Amino acid sequence: MRTFEGTGAVPAGYGPSAVTIGKFDGVHQGHRAVIGRLRAVAEAHDLRSVVVTFDRNPLAVLAPDRCPEALVSLRQKLGLLATTGLDATLVLPFDRDLAGLAPEAFVQRVLVDTLDARSVLVGSDFRFGARGAGDVSMLEQLGREHGFSVEIIDDVRPEGERRASSTWVRELLAAGDVRHASELLGHAPTVSGIVGHGAARGRELGFPTANLSPDAEGLIPADGVYAGWLTDAGTRYPAAISVGNNPTFEGVPRKQVEAYVLDRELDLYDRMVEVEFVERIRGMVAFDSIESLIERMHVDVDVARELLG
Image 1 (cartoon, rainbow, N blue to C red):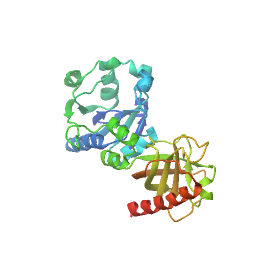
Image 2: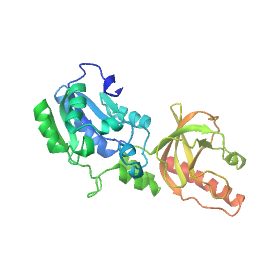
Image 3: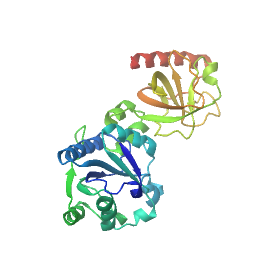
Image 4: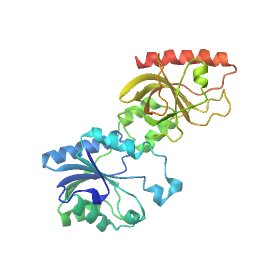
């Protein structure tokens, strides 16, 4: 998959293309269904398959107080999109200039002049242009003027009434339900970050952990202990993962992600790793003694080992 950062990065004459537009936060089941249909249309008509997305949630510019926390960073999103078989992703910097484009100007600049769009796939509630003035009906009219068709993609509803959405995934992660979130995403919730030097409490207790930096990428699930995987340089290791402020000790920052790799000790300091969450083992609790904490940690590791096979 090629990645273009801004319309100016797209080579002259790129296209003709089939295009879909959206935030694609998390690249969940609903997004993947759209991309699957996009690729089918592109293949049938000898077009390039292109996703148009943004470098941030538009609400971060338009209404920061209402902007939800992202499920994935831009880097993570592009990595997920690259697994879908797309030809290209065009990342638009969402700033006041882009936000102020009239719907007609957005279509002309992005779909017509840059991508030579012949087919555009969107959801029924798609809005575009300044103040969301453009809707599907306007897009269809502009398509007739510029020579592209518009296809409305139905929502994916994996459990009946509710459609797959990034909002739903956030709710599941906030509840610690990473198994359900994985089903909705089509991949495990993942946090990426540099391993830093912590207080070494895990090592003192017999469970040395890789502590991710506070600026780790990806939405961290609810406090608790999880079974999952740690990936370093392409190698995956089974792990028991702690999320939270560890109430047994004082001075531990909130939402600390600590991963204990099962049955081996690795030197991971200052390395970029990925931590995947597979199943929640328990919530975070305060223990009345170090001995009871160590006893429970042994149980957590055994449970994680069993869950991960």
